[in-house]
Amino acid sequence: MTQLIVTNNKRKKFAYEPNFTEKKEYRPEDVKETGLAFVGHEISEDKTNMNQFLHYDQLYTIRHGLNSPFFIGLLEGKILGTCCPKCGDIWVPVRTHCWNLDCNLEKTEWVEMPLTAKVHTWTIAGWSGRSSLKRLPIILVYAVIGDSKVAIANELHGINPWDVEFGMPLKIVFKPKEDRIGAITDFHFEPAEDWKPTPMNLEKERIKKLVEPVYKWIKTIK
Amino acid sequence: MTRRVCIVGGATTPFDYGSTGFESIEGGAAECIRETKQDIPNFSLRDLDLMIYSHFSVHFGHQLSSEWIIHDHLGLVGLPHYRVENGGNTGGSALYAAALAVMSGHHDVVGIIGWETMDSVSQSQGSEFIAMASDTRYELMVGGIYPIYYAAMANKWMKDNKVTEEDVASIAVKNKNNAMDNPKSQWYRNEHRYITIDDVMNSKLISYPLKKYDCCLMSRGVAFILVCCEEYAKKINPDGYVTIDGMGLSSCTIRAGDRLNYPSWNERYGPGYPEMTEFGACRNSAEQAYKMADIKNPLKEIDFGEIHDAFSTSEAQIYKALGLAGTGNIAQFIRDESTFMHGQIPMNPGGGLIGYGHPVGATGIMSTIECFYQLSGLIPKKHLSKTTEVPNSECGIVNSHAGTGTSISNFILRRH
Image 1 (cartoon, each protein chain N blue to C red):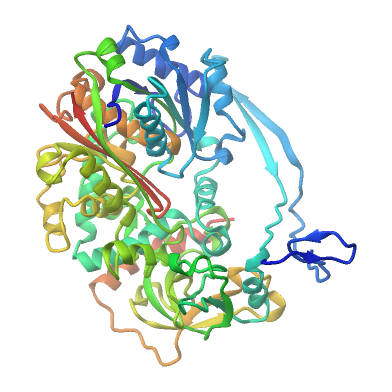
Image 2 (image 1 turned 45 degrees about the vertical axis):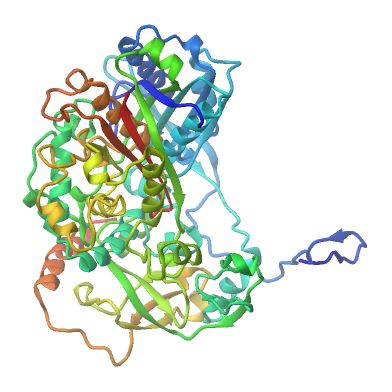
């Protein structure tokens, strides 16, 4: 963004205006944008307290802008990182400008990352936000992809929750192309092919005991 | 040197999830000020020359700029006002702003109102709203909510520091049991029982190693605190005012995974810190506060603290970041019950977030009020007994904490 770009209609702009030609909708049928609506109320027996129920349903546009190549890369089954041409630091999640103060917000370059990673730390969730409840228990790992200077969070599949380990090697597995939406959920981690879990131990038994009720509870969620 | 900043009074509504009888935010704010005025009868709303509002999420309030409703209701139209928002450190940041206003000499008497109305949505929806303060593009939709991020950080921290699940459970036990002496606390009002380490260990899995009782409570609540110059403090509460002798505010990455090699941390503390396990912004802001308050040995010079125990594990991590213990002795420090009421440095005698509750915008204000009560000798009046009083305390620390450790403030308060 160092120079003004003159667009077709001769107006000076700081960037090309994107022309969005590829569009995909995958909104579930029950998602309706009703905006704000009062949908009910309740009053206490002694008539001193009232609660009112407000429904709010709104479509948001997340404009990825400079970060767009990362999310477009996901659609193509690629993990794109960025690299500072001055200091060489690499990141996924990406930084479009370098974090080293001496690089003075140098614009970074896009690099394709390997589809392998290593667990930095992990947890096993038995509870989560409303949109994730049905996937519980979730193994969430923070893993370092390739030579990235940072760890990225994502789910680890294909393994018993109690078998996850610090430092274990991972591969990145993408959803089938037709199911991808250009979001972080387009991929997850799985153990690398040659990885084998270590035998059961006290901590693994403890985790197994904590996780068992979660499996039962999830079956009862509508 | 800039002007001294004092605290002369403050109060909260009861904290709860659901009905408290203080439901409207402006009504709750008015009740907090009315209680404060009972403690310092000479205080008049006319004395205020700035109001700072401490509120985190408009998602919970279904109301933008809700501070305008409160300010108007309090009869303060014409007085300058603005809102401070800084995640879980909103309260601490509002206090920081108020202190700066007084220090500068531009304002003499500053009121802070903090609040959150988290019971306006279900707990799982509430968790998701809070998680919208994580990087939603990368973390929210992969099952990420704050307890899960904290669990991932704590899991490695506990291994690195040889701290066990039982060790951190003892912190949850301490805070919930302290709350049993505090009638405004959510734990006292709801589950209302003394618990043991076994109760924590047997509570349901939230995210390993965190169980339900290791976690703070989602709350509705309002708090008010009065910050002022020393001249006013001497006039309004000559025998009970407290001074803010040190303060610090620092920052860290929004995504916990981004702090493994962060250049500015490497410069300050060397490579490998804060890792994904330590709270660099807590250490950094504590160092600023200690320097300002001339504290060389926090464990010896600070009598107690009200700190941000969003999780039992984070309270343990905060002990370390405050310099109370190191990698070699943090486990023993916890096992010695150093932060229990009978310990060397009681932490969260008011119950903390785990016992009192965590209505985000009100939380840091609540912690400061509890610290003020201790130093001002008000605990026997405000709590149910003297069991949660730190006798003859002279110096307390207040800690307010946001994100995954993304913004953290520390304050050193002293009896004048």
